[in-house]
Image (tube, rainbow, N blue to C red; front, top):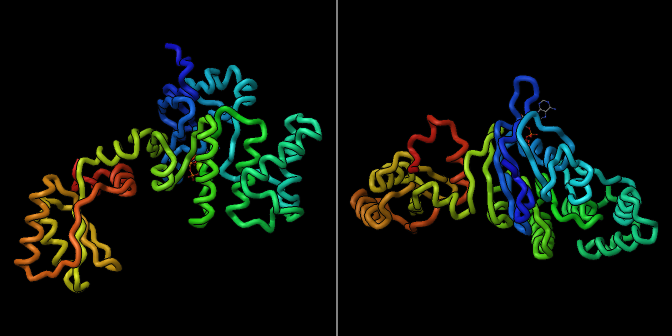
Length: 325
Ligand SMILES: Nc1ncnc2c1ncn2[C@@H]1O[C@H](COP(=O)(O)OP(=O)(O)OP(=O)(O)O)[C@@H](O)[C@H]1O
Ligand SMILES: [Mg+2]
């Protein structure tokens, strides 16, 4: 079967990567339509970087096929490379140089002439809000500035398809927001982005589609909404007035919701449980809390967060038996 499909920026079929007996990737399938953002979400060691490095032609797969921009990554590595940009997990800018010097250097490495390299550097510095950094060396950049420079460097050649390996890991919320803005701008301009992340919120914010990987396998896929819906259950949240009643509230709410995986958060005086029948659980929780003499400050029904979906999906089987599916 041919994977080639003009609508797909990326197509991966039964892709495997083994290191000796270790499966870094065990049969991954994935297609990414053009001008969309695909998030690859997973914990440490899931296989995210391995997948990105294979797609970026830096690593050869053990078996299976991968096409980027309609081109086989092993047979047409050079042509693939001309169409992609890569922001590695550990970026490659020179710390001693300024942002401008780094970008000009990258331009020259890609055989842009001196004038075009300088013009491109200027354009990218401006686009990522780094134009007034002057001669400041990268060592003096904040984390957010640094990651935006990395992003600028990956865009020197105006790639059709951009791979971002954990673009915001280690950034504070502001730095993260800055990078998100930059990524949104790119996608608005027609670039296809595949990004890896350990942050569910990031996938939720940026991605059109999400695959969740764990131990080299895709364990769930869909939009953020589909993944949330896949968990099946909405949740009931109860904030109790008196922290001392948290444990008894947990057992009361658990019974009312017919759930055995009730979670509590002592700092927020919060009890949370999945529910199958929303209204019945709500009515029963109100009644049962009242009967038990527990004062609730707030009771609400809500969809599960992506974080809860993720924990549910990557949990060991024995710890997830209580969760509603
Ligand atoms: N060169 C290698 N030799 C042996 N095993 C490797 C090699 N590179 C990666 N692995 C293993 O393959 C698995 C997947 O690694 P990978 O770097 O793709 O994970 P990741 O999802 O990017 O993790 P992280 O979030 O920590 O970056 C891990 O178990 C890792 O130890
Ligand atoms: Mg990685």
